[in-house]
Length: 266
Ligand code: X2W
Image (cartoon, rainbow, N blue to C red; front, top):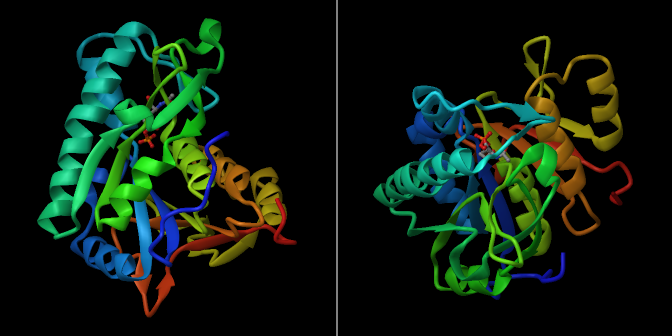
């Protein structure tokens, strides 16, 4: 990642929030209220998913869709649908809802003003799927310092201008790293990492590996915690997983499972 620098010039910590497609249309009033409170303390950037919307539309159009290690194989036809859903429907819906709650949201996708530059991961096996290499943090800084909330759809351009689809968890981690964010929050359809129905409030990178081996963390939570682990650094000390059907911020604290690196170094 080449354009990595701290932002913005507001003197507040930066928080990148990833809103998963599984929860996007079921976010509670408490969620929006606590997001408004959170934004009094942090500068925020939102990155959203939309996987279920893309899958439903592909199914309706009888276009085959498959995942390889949590990444959707993206042909040109699949990319067209991903664009319609992510940049069109989902981004528009989310930005509109955030603005109804007075949050000053600005909808963007990685194509805008060189916001996200990616390289193709493996065109042969995955098609048009990218890994983010550069983030135009200057654009985010301008918006944030003027009080806007950037809302980013996970699409990017390669250096030669090819459009690519990007996994939203990985996009959020890359944006958080490039922007010098102190915190990264994944909002999903469960209140955090659960063990026998109970929330694990704190965990470490080391414990997470064990929880995966023991089968406590399984399915779609595995790529999510793995992106969380890649984002941890001496600067980004905390990644949190929280649910969108509850408040995510109370008494100055973000609620959910906090993941820290044991020694503070990833
Ligand atoms: C994802 C982008 C959307 C996404 C996809 O096509 O589904 C790749 O897998 P969720 O709702 O966060 O899963 N892209 C390459 O990640 O949405």
